[in-house]
Length: 342
View (cartoon, one colour):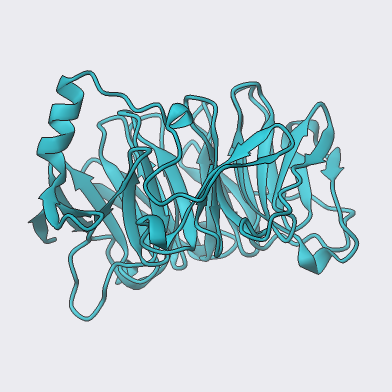
């Protein structure tokens, strides 16, 4: 494992240290309010779409890439973004680009997953350079064994006992302290291509793979089977989401399923099902589910009904890869080619 001092680039101002600046910000009691930040610094002018004020940031605004793949807000209030060309932190005004060190011939550019644990460590998954950890001013690559660093990391989740779960295209890895456990098809995974992992409040770990779902409980993997009546439904690329009210949702292609209700399925369609796929899901403060899709932009789900946000402006596009509601109530969208949208 290699370790280097974490540096960053802020706009065109040249290299600078992240952590001293961040400590000063904390000393001032600084917690950014992304929802209240005015549009400036190269962002597109606001426009009104129904009751929503829309602001967009692209490469011209300082983003590493117009394809935003993952989003998360850290405990100090900053928004972190993974893109197809690198990692960035956003304070509501400008982007600070974070470089991950080169490993041999591989550049850790395409970011696929982000997770901050209770110790404020940032875990970063990449498509071609494995898993990375940003901690106490340094960044290092995490050795997952069996050449898993060359597999694409697809998802990261934290367990109730402090362990870390990392899904990739070669299986599922559990990190607990210095102990590392690899789970593959031989251990009960339906497929070694893991698409999502979610840890419920009870400690049960839910895993979705290319060939189906399973759960890890009491040290064992158990398959979870369900049938869909949707002709376009497929177990591939589905995900799992555990909301604050204890509902466990499965999603993929054109369907959303409340697993607590057994076989009661909630559907939405738009004619040609090949034009629609759910990519991401998050829960709003009011309990509403926000759904990012390919082909249909953003939908909300509440009280058993789906509603579509009419984001028809061409600059926004319709492919939402990542979706996140911050602590101020603003909804953030990571789009395939339209950058970051608030």
